[in-house]
Length: 375
Image (cartoon, one colour):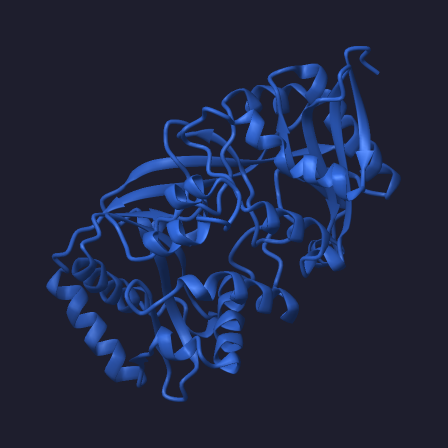
């Protein structure tokens, strides 16, 4: 143990509050960092749907004065390990000053715990499931992430790799200028698909009023990624309800679209919201007293949108349905005066990356999941 720093497992409410607030001091002055809501962070750690079936441990490294200099969480998701036949733990909520003594203490604690639980590997930074903030930023530090993505300092990469971690996979995020001239061929394909399959555009504003339709939508969302996205974990019903509660209030017909079959089942979707990052920065970790005001103002729209979710359910993949929701979104963005879209992280080898690369684009950010064998 370092005489300058000491590591401690935490579980008390006071310590968890300090754990959650540490990045506010670490990133003070970093104009790109977007603070999450403190209440949301505490709920994620202590009472979120996946936290109820996952194992969790948290540690902080403190200096001689008891001031936190680093934090980390260790997690084990049994559903992930069962699905992929692995014995993996994951780390998340990793933040530290630029000191290998601190990062080493953090990683060693998480690795010892994971090994004691019978795990043979540990990877991250990840959330409990596929829905949270994940992926260490390794390129694009000059840019501000969308509100539901991580930011970290460039030195993190050196600290992680010095601890023996190697790349598992990368996620790519693109900045896409909105081009409103839809090629005539794509327009013809879109019309043909609608008629051939009896499809129609649904209403997000109507769908969000029906709990059963919201559940159908999130089931379609989960199904669209199952088997197609590496490390994806199908959602439980509780997770779908929780995600719906967090996303649906921000979603509207103005920036999103859903394609329905003849029986009114969602089959494809493009969900976008105005970029909320600046609003979250102004909120400074709390909705009160003025956080709600900044978010509501941002939801009216600006020049950039967050392209949150795009996909089609398995039975409809490979049929060109992306042209349907892309054309719909382009028209909506044109009316709203949108100039740019920011894609959410896409695995570098995935089909979604190839779709976005058909459009004019620049690489906005690259994120990395690291992995280490511990036994």
